[in-house]
Amino acid sequence: MESSEPLEVPETPTDVEPEDLEKLESEVKELAEKILHYRAALPEKLKNTFVSVLAAQRPYLPDLSEPGTSGEVSNPDAGNVTSNVPANGAQGTLEKIQLLKDKISSNASAMPVVVKRMQECLLKIDKLDSQNLTIHPAFKRKRTS
Image (cartoon, rainbow, N blue to C red):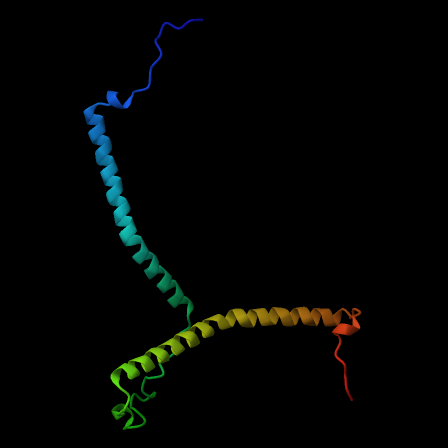
């Protein structure tokens, strides 16, 4: 049961041909370039996708700074407001207003979930009420007349 073929010995690093080595080095360089490209491009793509998904989930809330429905400003002096607040104070106020608008928008987009949970809780309460189970006295309200 002896085989007449000699066993192949794995190549050692010194037995690698220069052409194969150059080919492997070029492949490694290509992979490194791809990795650098993906590291640079993917975070921005992910951010844009995330922003668009969030924007699609939010309901449209009209901007409160828009003029009235007729397109005219109801108060003629509203556009000519003068302020004694320095420009950096006004910028801080604008940032606070924008933050408030963002919070209101996120709260409004969360409303359907809250309403659904409230409805589910009310259904569970109604179901428990209709079963006429004995409730421990510690959980009953004391009624005063």
